[in-house]
Image 1: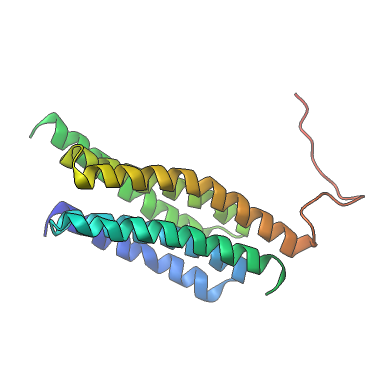
Image 2: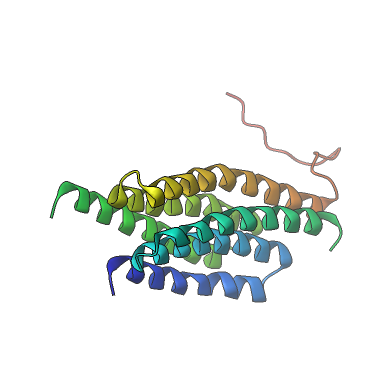
Length: 83
Length: 109
């Protein structure tokens, strides 16, 4: 295991607090945790791509960054008034 | 161990540390507005990790793409924070504008 994969494992553990907030707190708190989880997910994908020496896989991180941003904006808009 | 390796490790450890602390902060804080501070901080941590990859790989295929991701995360973090804070306020009070009679602290400089 190289240092990049080790960092990815540490960040996987950091997703646990986000999951706890998403499940146990209010919807707005959960949205904040979801946004943080999106950032952490993107970073994990970058680290895995570097750690496994599969460099084209970094495209997945680009897609994850864009989709988590758009998804969080949609959630914010919906939670604002309708849910 | 060259200077490049040292820079790479320092950036990686800093970035992962900031991200882990952000996750703990989101869990520990009490209100939405307190928690929101940690989302922008996490963007900085993620950007540091991306820059660590760029330092290792130089300006190659993956190096350029990780720089793009870092730039995107740094731009999108504050936008998300603003949108979420606005949504939280509208959900709480019905409108984001200050209502008549609502107490607002104004700091004069």
